[in-house]
Image: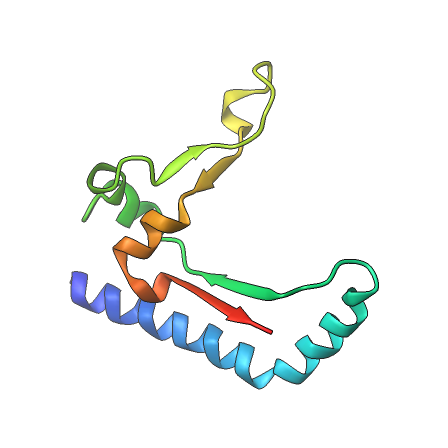
Length: 104
C-alpha cells in the first residue's frame, strides 16, 4: 500500500513538473512583469507530505524531528490558527524529488 501511495505522489509531482514546463512561456512573461517590482532568480517546487504520511505511516514527524516548526505568530494568537513552517532541508532527505529549484 505504501508503494502505491509513493507512486501516486510521484505521479502528482510529475504532473506539477509538466505543468511548469508546459507553462514556462507564461511564467517567463510573469517573471518579466515582476522584474519591475521584485526580480525572480528562481522558483522552488515543493511537495509536502500529507497528514497520514506525517503522523501515521511512516510517521515522518518522528523520523525527521524538526520537519515542522512554528511560524511567526503572536503568543496571544489562537493555538488552532498558528502557522507552521517546514524545513526544506529535511524534506529533501525524505525524497530528493520533494524539493526542486528552477533557476532563471
